[in-house]
Image (tube, rainbow, N blue to C red; front, side):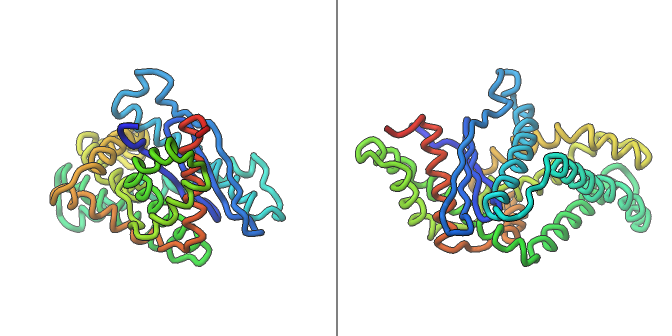
Length: 311
């Protein structure tokens, strides 16, 4: 390949999910200490037509794809990690997703829209600019407080370590993919060889990555501030409805910004990326070697699937 595919991932329970253009893979450490892997076809909705691949449109669809696939893989990883536990029914899972979505809307859309006018009034500020800025700042504070509280939960620490493992292995792939491709062709490398190579290279890589979903969340807040400057309905209900209606546009613009900024260097771009990278420091932990092995196995299987098999 002339260039490396843009692979992404997500930490799940005792494992890592990796996503490519056409497939998704997941590797999980089961209670016996073995790595259990799962690969599925996962074409993005944006691949179905040229119209859906247009900038912004593809970002909105990618956002939806990531959520739906992430929930599916999270539940599958729970089944592998806790085989003796009673399995939740599909209706119970669907209800949990709905509840989570309602809470997200309440925290990140309704609450800032309700609180911002009181803050603006207390500051004796007037004008659309200040109203939108205060609402964005409230949204940032809610996001930081939410991430900080979640990241301190004892039950979530292992997931944060796998999140770090995911980033380190993706870095290892992006920096060494040419050598890996050569070894596949010349030395007939398969999943075990690629996995071992990635795990060894990943140990010295950063646990932070500019394309992380945590950075995406901050970019969404930043982009929403700009978008909402031009949409200023009166009344909380109207504001909430407008923000929900504009969510696909905001997600699409944020996706394009994240994709563009990830590949750029320099002081200006580092400044823009700094808040998102700072949030990642709260959502990642340094992984153990065994966790790197799981993340590397997941990515190796994704590479195999995307290539149609090595041999």
